[in-house]
Amino acid sequence: MEKEQDEHKELFQTHLNLDDLLQKIKNNRLEDIVHHLCHSKNDKIILDYSCFKYFAGPETYSIILNVITNNIDNILKHSDTFSVHVNMKNLTMSDIDKHKSFICTLSNNFKERYPNKLNTCNIYHAPSVFAQIYKIISCFIDKETQKKIHLRK
Image 1 (cartoon, rainbow, N blue to C red):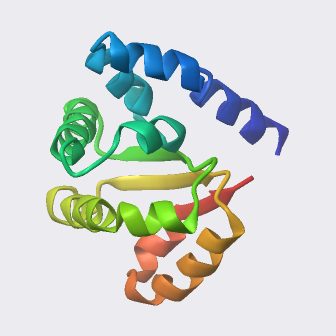
Image 2 (spheres, rainbow, N blue to C red):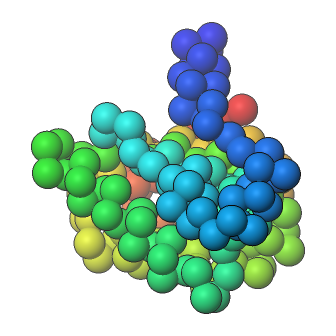
């Protein structure tokens, strides 16, 4: 358990605070923002919702999707599988509703482009409502994929 917490801290240590994020937006530092939102480390994709929340919208969804798929493609050049680590801190129901189309697009993209390539998906700081929604929708996710998804504290 302690090892998992240490890994979690290490994965998301590049967290931006809101002031830094707004400054990067003001200075048009798109690359920096996108790097904090999604980057790779070894065979891991690290997605940080705390950055996504302020940057994502219909006009940026394609950019975000391209960054995520480029990171995965780079990992798959030297590895057979990849792991996903998602920080969902501060996620709300209204956020889920707001980004529903992107979530569906991302999910379909993963299913089509990367069948049998997911090693694990670790979700950190998921609000309790997310856990409840996951229980409901998990019946639509094949059993093998379900085994790879872990809700972490």
